[in-house]
Picture (tube, protein in one colour):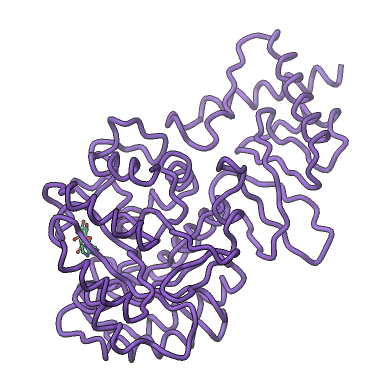
Length: 437
Ligand code: IDC
């Protein structure tokens, strides 16, 4: 009898959950909806719960947890639950947990994650499994480092990061989310996301932006990426400010805080000045880098740090003649927009590599440098051949629905995940096919 009352209560709760559910299909948790129309189905739900709990108890891994969504139906499961893994919703998703040296806590979003008991000094990270070997990018490749001109993984094998950048997070915060990044990972196959935080443009961090709000967006993005086993770039997106010296004080404070927060996160990469431009010389940038890098290194001995180069991160050849010394794991930003930047920029890249610079294409698209205009796929294919041949990592601009050709999402589409092909731009579809190759 007690069980029947409990089951009825759960039906009421589940109906409430189903009614309030976001209709956006394709979110990482959309499969958690169940429609209940008759009392016959109560038994079904009970069975679902029992089946899932059985699955939990019979899986071979040592630790497991159940990721749940919003409302709870604890009453439904109390009689069944003999393990620590209480099922908060009857349609939960089982994921496996691996013990890592990193800490991650899922603090964001409406999803609640019940953490398994941690019995050792080691901390626990939860990852979904994604690739053919059943591992996320971070699980498979671990801590990265720079060897010569190449980025290599934990086994010392050259490893290319391939990913997407947010647009300015202040303007398009809705895409700084677990569901969007999960879509990018699972549908496009990205292994890295870049969090672009403008410093000087409207509502930029240093010119009127709400610093705490923006830092929280960064943290939300890092956490979402980490939970998904992705690498993540924290990008100090200078542009209208031209020289990183303009807001150097803010940059130092920002990177001190970020590197202290993420000192144990081996998936976090720091990009300390997106695109110096105007009269900013390599000597200026190098002087800035020599002030910011030690601040990061004081907290994090070996994180990958990407340094911007003159002329909107094109003059890697100039940087290569006077490299930053005294630190490991430094990379140099090379940015291109294929309809504007062609052979001559690849020549610069070639020179820089010859001089021993490790390059990272932390931003590119295949339209023109305004972020708009027609796509140049012929040139884009040349770029891809060049990047793949040299194992250079690349990050496509931008995850937003802004009406510009470098946006990945059609401007009329309000969804933040689960996009159909018709909701993606031409650039997005080209980019997806490139990553999947
Ligand atoms: C562009 C955006 C555009 C925005 C503008 C702000 O696509 O919507 O209005 O910035 O100034 C870069 C920059 C990147 C630019 C992009 C396209 O790093 O911020 O984004 N671009 O112009 N370098 C070369 C091109």
